[in-house]
Image (cartoon, rainbow over all chains, first blue to last red; front, side, top):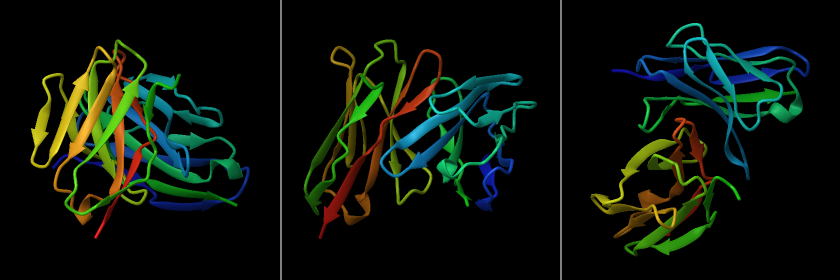
Length: 111
Length: 109
């Protein structure tokens, strides 16, 4: 069965370190998205991609970057982790006009 | 105006009752609409798509009103297991998926 997986599921890192969160989907979807979720803020869009070599900034993109070298993967990089980036991160993929499917999330703690 | 707005709740509803949520969206060019369910900060899961003609899935009915730019979700005969946060989702013409902040529902025994 097709799926979308995120790794790691939990991560603790120190302030200032570079961190990369992985997202891999086997749906063959062109559209992929990264969200963060904090209490009181709901899901906020960080970056998204409509296909290979395409990336776009979402509403909270500062301090994050993504790259799309193939259809299956959209890794999210925190260039220099900050305590404000402690959050739950969700990756999703979709086909045009269709609902999105989500990974199980990565809980990131920056200490 | 926010792109997608929902009443955050919580809605505290006795088991067996009917409950309805509304969600408004600002972009009249939006193409596709969905309701998602999210439990305890687990990943959101697609509950149902929303069509102008209205659609039903068991105890759940969804409706889209393009003229007034809102979508609704009706849950009949609510169960304890319906307790969750319900997220309104809108796809724009650019396929960007925008989530509302969600409406919390508590079904009371």
